[in-house]
Image (cartoon, rainbow, N blue to C red; front, side, top):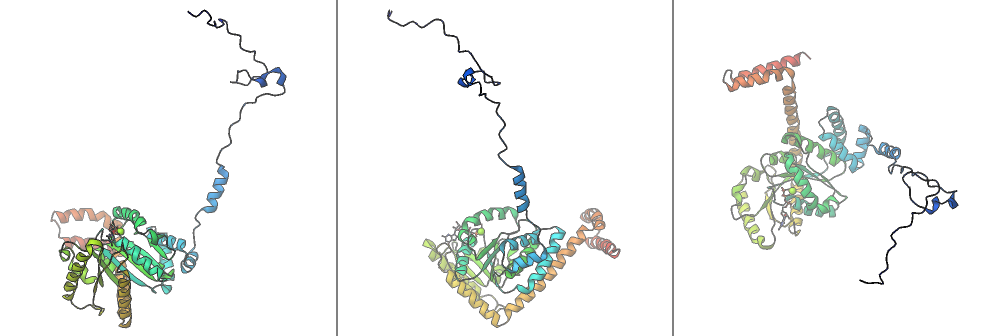
Length: 396
Ligand SMILES: Nc1nc2c(ncn2[C@@H]2O[C@H](COP(=O)(O)OP(=O)(O)OP(=O)(O)O)[C@@H](O)[C@H]2O)c(=O)[nH]1
Ligand SMILES: [Mg+2]
């Protein structure tokens, strides 16, 4: 045991006395609570003021609230090339609200005299053919030439379009930042016909806003190619080379619609395959009947990724347009397309009106059942429904 060990005092000194005015919850020794500082006292803390000034926020929101525009303002904005107003007008077109539709119709009506002065190009191809990459490369080439380009899409399946918008943000990076390009994704819902009618109206507004080249992209599955074909001057089918069985996969009808077939991804090890595929297509096209345009469809190869073969495609389209303007097919095709869209719109509206009719609605289900059970012929059932409809119309 260490006899020199210091022993600790067994009694601790009393804590110093607490003086001064005490603040609630601060029952501690503090020099400022000493009588020597009687002039000082610690006040109760106050609540922090709100970090957000709600009045200011409300003022800001009110100021920046989207003001409703008049038809006049929409038209002026579009004609002066204001893209924000153009986008808002397209949103009106896409809306299903009756007053939006009424306004959209008025805007389109006023834009029509300023529309039409463009080249409308349709692009189709199976998923993954490289449409977005092609549009990025082709579109950048056109804008470098001083063209003003609008890219629209017809993609009636909403699930897919959500994905492709995300994909296209990266694949059309350069183009989406280009002041001479305007990219509008497909309306995300509705039937193919409905989506297409809206796209067709959007074309007119884009033209009135000064866009001289309109690209309409659609994914090559099913009916949408025919729909796009009915609203463009030039139809481009984007293909990729497979293992020699290219021609089997695509419908003859689609190939016949194409003014040019482009074999994309002709780069690296794929060049040879792309050239072979091009020869196959050229041979197949020779067997098709002559086109009404007088144009012999071309087959080209390109690499959207490496920007090769793009210039030749641009030239090919220019040659086509020159030819069809000269032989008046350009004008005839547009006129017949306009007639088509008039009848298409009438059909759609009549159908819509018919099925919305109360009398029709109430009788439809039971008649449908009777038709299924073969209690009544489909023709008699249809006649009965139509008569109900006409009767309801007559009362108006
Ligand atoms: N090697 C090569 N790859 C390419 C070329 N063009 C596109 N690709 C690639 O092919 C893939 C699909 O290209 P996209 O442009 O997204 O094809 P898409 O036709 O728009 O596809 P969806 O939007 O799904 O219908 C991407 O990985 C591209 O990088 C090309 O010219 N060469
Ligand atoms: Mg795409």
